[in-house]
Image (cartoon, rainbow, N blue to C red; front, top):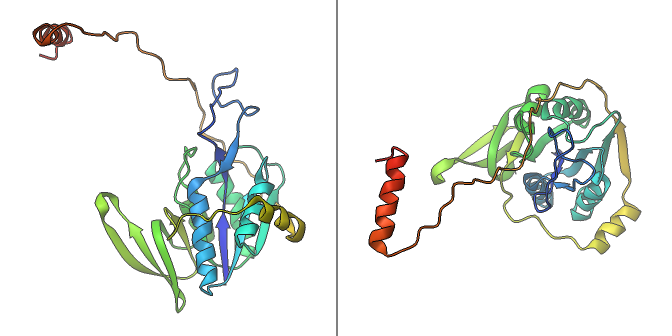
Length: 254
């Protein structure tokens, strides 16, 4: 069985984010990208399934800066096949477009199970998993924290807000949005990544459908504006209390 993992690169929030001169997007020249955190958990879950005999892991990602490093890292972790989708790509493409590009390639790989991260912090138009499921005409379950293969089905643990969880059995093939793998994504030494670069073949495939859906238009992007109404109140308890009453009264809060 083929376990397909779709990964994407997103802005690294550890780095300072700079805004372009037009003020409507991030400055792509200064932007550092990293694999979406939830996608790393999706890959880890797929590798765990492989280690239990579920099948082989295929990782696919859209071409762009840093993508080859991400794919070879996936190979070093245990992926059996890595695919870079090339063509008229653009940075931080919308998920609707990305799903439309990925779906025909994933379908050609005859997937038994497709895993994606449940969400990404740069998404403005919905998570990738349900969009892929729509194009592939497959069932989708999100917020998955555990998955086990059993007799043509996948048993999953789905989490809900408030600490609730449900166990389900889903007929295969299916698409899962992984919130957390059963264990933290494994660490791989750089020496193993370099070895993968020498021994693992990076497959390139052309985007089968060059259609690009219009992204959501950003009218303005800006740093939070610093407030100018901060006031430090000093004095004894009675003086501070009296001043607070005055402030709340002026704001019509009393």
